[in-house]
Length: 138
Image (cartoon, rainbow, N blue to C red; front, top):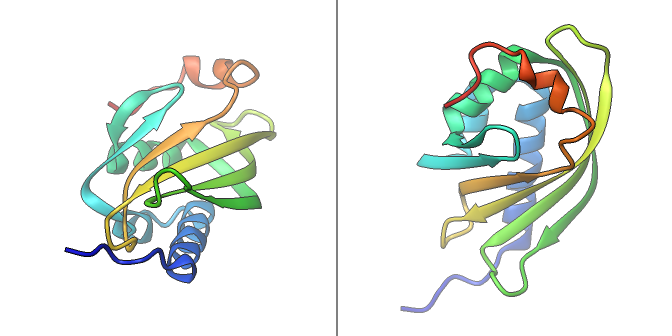
């Protein structure tokens, strides 16, 4: 069986839909971009379900604004794509802060849906924002 070639426009559109849903706090749209059992790998919360993670993020973080710096496609793994972002936000009433983030996505074989996302950033400057947060994702 021959694999579908990478459709960069389709993958790029999926990435823009993700960013838009994340910035708006649109959980239903965001969840529709992931497979049913997709996982998030977070540097603070570890491995958790997409629904648990983003539900928590939408409840705990306000004033989300993202600046897309780049979309990077996998070379060794064609079904991976990464977004490099500058992410401004406020965590549970704290002042706004901006962090540089890389969201690394694993895509389905047909490149139409995300199967997982690994979130990469330096947690040291913001770790304290989450230490006292209630209802952290599991």
